[in-house]
Amino acid sequence: MELARPSRKTNGKGVQVEDTQICVVMVGLPARGKSLIAQKAQRYLRWLSIDARVFNVGNYRRKDAAQPSADFFDVNNLEGERMRRAAAEAAVTDMLKWFKDGGIIAILDATNSTKKRRRWIKERCDKEGVETLFVESKCDDEELIMSNILEVKTTSPDYVGQDPEEAAQDFRNRIRNYEKVYETIDEEESDLTYLKIMNVGKRVIINAIQDYLQSRVVYYLMNLHIKQRSIWLSRHGESMWNVYGKIGGDAKLSERGEAYARKLPDLVKESFDGNDHPLTVWTSTLQRTIATAQHLPQEWNQLQWKALDELDSGVCDNMTYAEIKEEYPEDFEARDQDKYNYRYRGGESYRDVVIRLEPIIMELERSENILIVTHQAILRCIYAYFMNEDQEKSPWLNVPLHTLIKLTPRAYGTDRQVYKAAIPAVSTWRGKGSVAKHEDPLEDTTSLDK
Ligand SMILES: *[C@@H]1O[C@H](CO)[C@@H](O)[C@H](O)[C@H]1NC(C)=O
Ligand SMILES: *[C@@H]1O[C@H](CO)[C@@H](O)[C@H](O)[C@H]1NC(C)=O
Image (cartoon, rainbow, N blue to C red; front, side):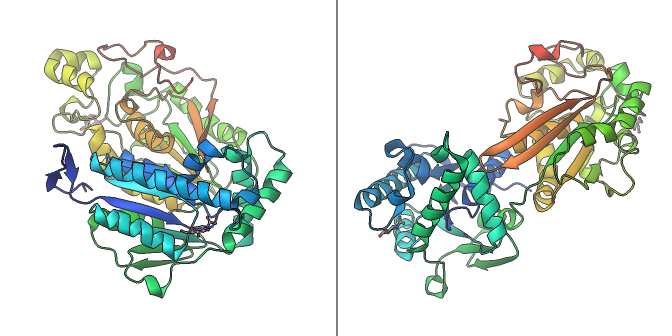
């Protein structure tokens, strides 16, 4: 399921570019989750190795007006109007330059949403052969808007260090100013390619999607919701293969692994705040993950996913790293050189795993509170998606055994909390070039513990 299409053209500078380039234009009033959607789309596309970038007009505007009050956004404030226009101009100019250099999908995150402005953006893109996909987030559910306002006022750089009550009031006034000029996408614009999302996915309208890449983006965005939720990640408890230093296989838990399984319900409870539960539990189909989840509350639904099975190490399944180095020295070397792309003989690479995890990510986006009990390589890929880690680094992440990670997506990034069960386990983290599995993981700069 490669997203990138095989036919490629080169741009003026000889850089290879996909023949489809898309500008995704966010449309909607403030506090409708636009920035969140933009950031997520960028993260998702990059995770799939598609060059994507958000151009946030607010960030351009902040260079000139760091913490403007609501008056700044009044239509009658000429100076404010001029600065907002200049910011939009600068963002679009940078974006078009980025496309010339081979960018594939830009996401233009801006608030000003008039028909005239949409025409202007479309004309600029048309001229450069860039497709436009307008994504409108409409919301009249007061509760959702309020929770978004709460989120924005506590996390937006516009309100750093300000009294939360005043910030919320100011933000509401800002929205009122935008409402005066806001025009929703309607029938008059039926020539535009657009996705209209009402009340965060309750209803969606899709118009004039033109090609495969656009439909992939639309499908992802349709599945998003912005309700508060968390995702818990845990490896299985220590397995007999972990103890012997072997990879792959379908081994049972060690005694310490069993102890972790008994401890997991408490560890999860310790991580709760507010309305976190109930959780749905996902495991792989391998017995070590199922055994690790067995003591979790009966009333929590459990689902087994084949797609969550450990990276397939092909002919190296059930071997130790020392054995692999002995038997397949070139492979051992090649894997260290480019761990993300290296594919085990008869097995998988990290890149393959990301492709098979795509439906998992899609399902995760549709879901609310989920606890995933799975394997090291799989967790590295899922973690990289949520934490925006590069592919160079993600295969080297240290995801220790007997540790629960709680991820909470927020408007400006993902919060992470780590809970350690006080149950010893071997370290299965291996540094580049080494066959041992007992290096001090704290030496690893990409360690989760930091
Ligand atoms: C939005 O843009 C239009 C012109 O493109 C401008 O007249 C209007 O004042 C802008 N409104 C806001 C709230 O930025
Ligand atoms: C590795 O061991 C598992 C049992 O733990 C077995 O099912 C699998 O076939 C073995 N793999 C290879 C390549 O022999």
